[in-house]
Image (cartoon, rainbow, N blue to C red; front, side, top):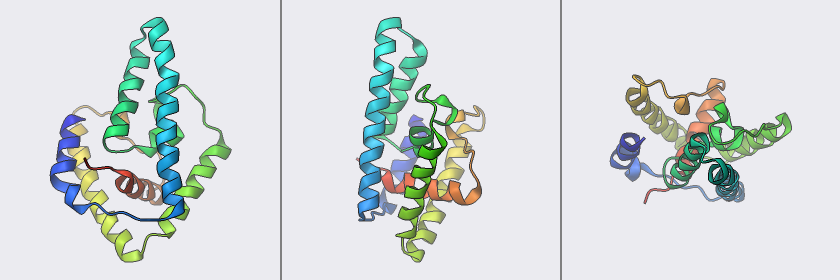
Length: 160
C-alpha cells in the first residue's frame, strides 16, 4: 500500500481534478462519516478482545481516510474488509444512484481524461499487487460501474 500511495503522489498529484456539485460534496461527507463509523465500530471489539482482525480494519479505514479512497469497501463493504455489516440492496442502490448522478455532472471531455488517468492508475495498482493478489484491489462490478467508481475514487483523493 505504501508503494501504491507513493506512486500515486509522484505520478498523479499534478493531474488532480475537482468538481463542485452538491452531490459530490454530499458524497465527500458521507464517505468521511462512514469511515468514522467503521473505525469506531471496530475499535470497541479490538479493545475488548485485542482482535487482530479488527485491528486490520481500523488500520485500513485510517489508511483510506488519509490516502486513496475505496468507495467499494466503504459503501458496499466488499469482502468484509472494513466491517461485518451487511449492506442492504436498497442502500447499495442508493449509493449507486448517487455515483451515477455525480458522473453525469462531469463534462464529457473531463470524464474521458479521468478515464485515461484511472486506467493508468489501475495498471500501476495491478503491477504492484500481482504477486500478492490482494482482495483490497479486486472489483466485482460491471465495467461501466467499475469505471464510475474508479473516477469517483480519483475525484475523492486528497493529495497532501
